Image (tube, rainbow, N blue to C red; front, side):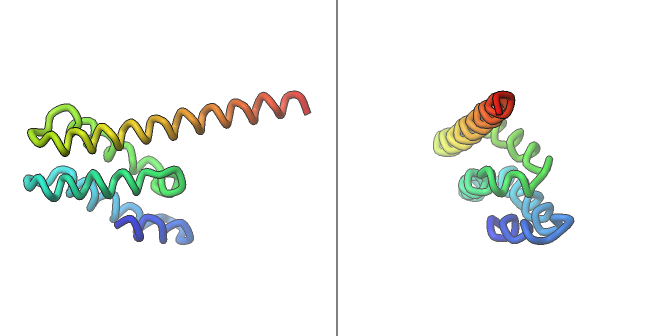
Length: 110
């Protein structure tokens, strides 16, 4: 799945990325806890900044599902991993926003 998303970087249209995102959402919604746990692991790696841009808006439903798991799953390991994934994504987005703001501010003075 991660490989499919990464490979779609060079392929216009992102067909592989969309299919991988759909498969990941299915894993996160699977009735079997080990599959949901594997899905959270894959999501954490798939939502890194490089692949997130390839995924376009496809990553938004993944985050929504992770939020549901973090808040409501019966398995504490799943709640912990989903929370960790959301925290990591939040840190990355915050850092990216700060870097963009810093670059914009720097551009004003050049």
